[in-house]
Image (tube, rainbow, N blue to C red; front, side, top):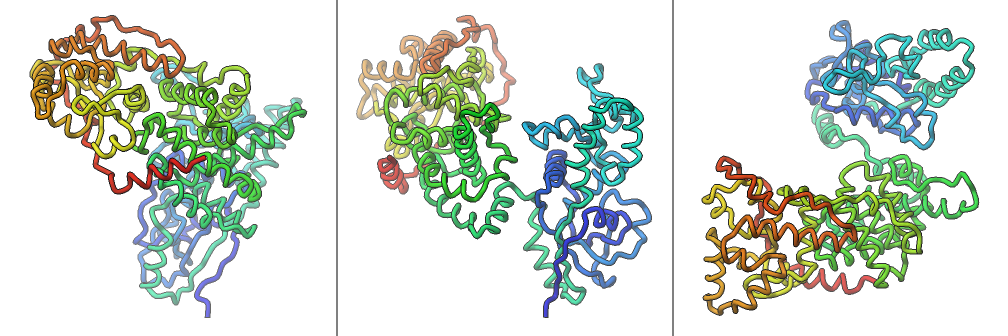
Length: 620
């Protein structure tokens, strides 16, 4: 005999029941923790009739669990007798209650939400971008509160700026009447509101949520087990989970298909952090570009896109049509990165840049390995890294890069990513964090340009990199620099770091360069002094300045050398906005803290070395 029922329930009804205390939380539920971004994303999903997951409730016996109202419910809800306890869905229901029903700012973040009506009606704008968080006084300011950007402090100003308050979404009649009066005689504005009402308000009015209701006879042990299984941190459904559910309705098991592809891709260590949403974004790029190309004679061609909306609009047929080709594109991306001396995901300048890289290489087909084409892909890639263009708002750049790089390869204009790249010597000088894309980029460029180990003279190819545990280390050792009272902002810069094997770095110790170079030349076996100077030059290091322990002269010369490497990689001249003696002008700073992101020896990965090399050799 079934111990639960499943029924669709109106969202408005559920929120009213939460407000009245008819639905409460069991005492073992965690606190509400969602942030502004998650709340806005949830509202956006509902406004487009997307599923946001089922709720799970337990018929209340009034005996077992101490109930409490959802956060923000009015005082009468505390004393009301509940009929159900909410086991799964607290984060969603509390967020929706506070945003859509409660006539007060959202707890903890002190904002009201508004729909920007004009953006809602613009199909090119992602729905989340049309939802705005406004401070509790309903006035948006900049310049430390001095300048007013948007004033929504009265209904008249809401009407004027076409901003609809989200907490009026179930009771819009009075707001609508005021809007009609304010825009009396302006048919265009009234038509905008009618369209907004049809597109958003009616959806909320009709929106239903599936509710799984456990019978009150369910044992306490079963309740706790179910709660543990279904409520794993209040994580919102991501695009992959939503698409998995939608594809299941078409008879396609996306999760199983992705698991097989992920297992294959993650054998390449540069790809071991690939997420399912990365793959779906690549599919969306290929699908939307194919649609755009098919409509080449139409002035209203659909845009190429990898936004969340584009992912959620993917038909199962698009995934099936492009998945094999995109998987090969990711494998080619791993091989490409390997040629650029980027062997591990840890060393990737931008994880996000793999998505357009894979889509580009998938689109190029067998021609991807032609030298002229590879050179253009390399130039685009390094411009993205040193222009530091893949740190935020990347979806729009994904789309532009796929279209523009392919067109450039076919003889068209330079892509926006090349035009947007601007490298400053002062920026390179200040790089200290190994999490920085440009920091990782410099390290890879040095290895790619032929840097050889100070001790062995070996190139840092794939085998040497892993077998010798190569990582980035100080050239003028930190201990020596601190003894000289040099500022950490200077000696922890990428300019004073270079890739070295773990064994070589141990031989350097914390002494002056002149001493560790002598140590290398007198070791058993010794390193020939002339050869050693050649090894240093391969790292863009001036041997004479290093042997003289001339830190400032070395620093200025090496910064120039690194900029030369970056200029060659990006095919753009960097702005050399640092005077030759700029590092000396910084002066001593004995109180500078050590770099928290400084190097740590890479762990040896010999066990996987042969497999990785074999995989890469098979990529076509």
